[in-house]
Length: 247
Length: 239
Image (cartoon, rainbow over all chains, first blue to last red; front, side, top):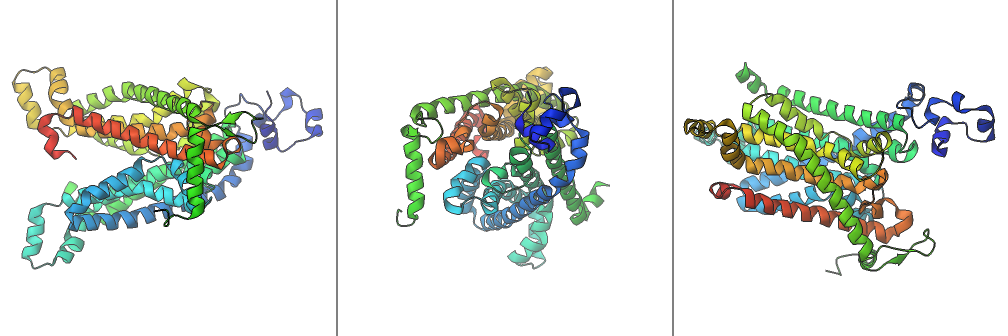
């Protein structure tokens, strides 16, 4: 009935605990049937902050690494069409391998820790960002490119001044999906010893303790929503011409 | 090849394959052997079973809604935002919460996993149907097709590539997360990974290899299904 882990969470382990408490006077968090314990949440919310920051760090580094690689691959494939099938296959395989399996496949090579988690998480983002970048570049109307060439632009100028700006909405949409997914997946980084918000769920406060799961899961969901909205706002900010066209 | 790989890595891979094929002694089971091909097959079947259940639930819930909204061209922004938001569901918290709130076992885990499959299926069904060429739909209507005939005979066949990519995405998410189902009391291949004290390092690596292979195999099967379902007229354009 009373889980020892729950009692540990109460912070009153030992014989004194059992002498002075009856079922009626037990604090909320010691009972399984309680859905959410406000008092416990209030007094422990601070302990979630370092994990939240760690989570943000994991996501930011993974997405930045994933973006740099995927963007470079997409530019290469944009120039050399024969590279497309192998890149699609390679990123597809990395996307399909479940992150949790990836963590442990890497263990013999990189050991336990944050780096392992980052490698697996950024590998997962590659395909999403790569595909969106390619789709964005392919969607640039050829008439626009012809016009740029007619104005005397070189290939490099066309890429950076015409094609990439026009592909920006798709590219950022890819980064947005990759970021939101990574926020969710990073809860699994705890299995690789990578920290993050999975840590309180899986190790620190116990996986059967609902209040804990709701707080940690809730923080992860909030992070996902916040990062999604942030990137949406960024997309509007750097593509002002789309707003002008819409109104 | 072997010159490129460091010796400890080769030894771990060898250990993992030994674990897959022959039962090993464990430190904590009191002489009872763990691993071996029989247990591998049993856990693989468990993982496939929960994946199929979860996918079935997700399809039953998401497909009708996605198809209907796509056919009516309504709530576009909402349907697309739903797909992105669905990717933000933290897997570990979902499984842990469902286990603590509803209970453990096959059906509860399947329901929890179905939650992950619903957004991609719904969004892709919507987008697939929504972006079907309007003139094709008008032509069908002009030929006297009913709305349900238009959906079944025109819109769905044209939307198959997008629809299937949603189902594939859902399947990958579900089978990947089924790996942590042992936390909710349902044993899958993930048990090898999560319970290192029982299965040892070899078991962990073996579990990771098996889970990765299972996901890749499912993806291959579904890619094959997609090829079969895609109408011949669409094939040259699909990848």
